[in-house]
Length: 223
Image 1: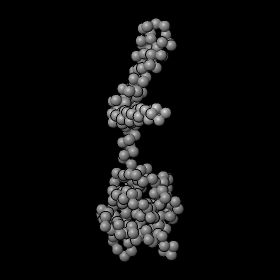
Image 2: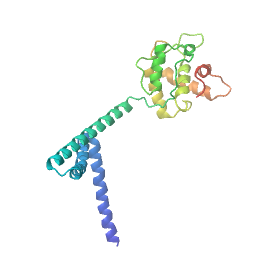
Image 3: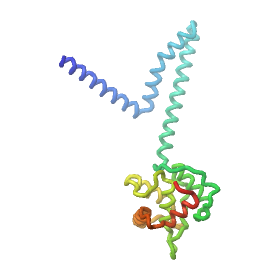
Image 4: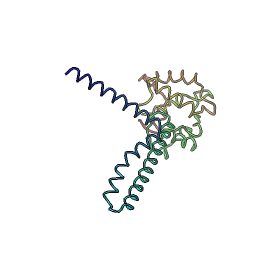
């Protein structure tokens, strides 16, 4: 009995290994996958041809027509999935809340119509075509206020960004660098890091009111 079990184990091991290799080969080549699916459709085409006609000529036409329709369907499906993969690659990687921004009192946030359009793209998961210009300045200064951007992202990133994990934090910082400008200037990576640490600490302190967060909530409400 032990020998039989071991022999069956070796058989299924080889079977599973070959199956895995076959699936991997199919995944690497769309052409192989298309031909394989077309091969599977051939017996069905033959059965359909034999079922629906007694004439050889009609059977042949049904057989060829079925294969052509199957081929076009497979190619169309493969093209759609290829496009879907590219579509997903274009997304920035953070899940964001999608709301109707239009009609809100966004001028309070010093955002223009163009800024709003580009922020809408951000909410949809895309990198904006033009950077959103943060014109909110720190008190008694001409430098842009990073707390405003963090508070804005905190409102719309699902789950917020307070104590965001390392992986999503990396995506967040990259997204801010590519999607925002600070009063017309590029985002400073060093300022971004230090400002986020201070903002994160302030947001967790119940005794501290982060004015930028309050301003965002006033316009868009709580998450």
